[in-house]
Amino acid sequence: MDSSSADTTVARTTTTLLQQGPSTPPPSPPSAVVLSPCAACKILRRRCVDRCVLAPYFPPTEPHKFATAHRVFGASNIIKLLQELPEENRADAVSSLVYEASARIRDPVYGCAGAICQLQRQVNDLNAQLARAHAELAGARDLLALVCMAEAASPSPASSTPSAEAYYCSAADYSSHLAADAMYVGDGVQAAGTVVGWGDEPLWA
Image (cartoon, rainbow, N blue to C red; front, side, top):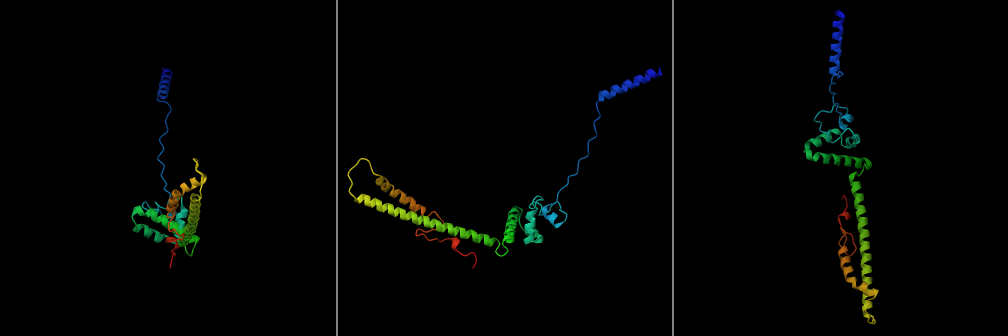
């Protein structure tokens, strides 16, 4: 009797375990989220707080931005400037600071002013080239007008098929209007071929 009851108990336990299926492991606790400090706080070796004024503009993936601005302006000046500006203007201010700092590192004497002066010289050179092109176009237009006048003055036999010179002369008026309009396309270029514009003004007195 004892052995039969023990077998019955083992059978019932086995059936219960088979019905329940394999035991599932307990759920693992949620992993803690580790927030990386911003590039500014990492370079300054300080704790990055939740509302760090530098974090939105100097992410940890771009440490060179803060390193460049910090080298020229200093961290305290950058923080003070951002705190005085509204939030919608802070991103543009940071971009300007980084650009000005990069230009100052490349050119310690003139900084951004040197880059602006170089661009002005390029504009002046392009305006001069445009003025020369307009002068050449005006000379070609005058030559075409002389050819048309000579063609009109010389007697020619009547022909139903117009000559090539007639085609050129008929298009002279239309081309002259286009050329006259093109004389005013360039900024700071007069019809006489002289360059007058903001680029000729000196950058500093």
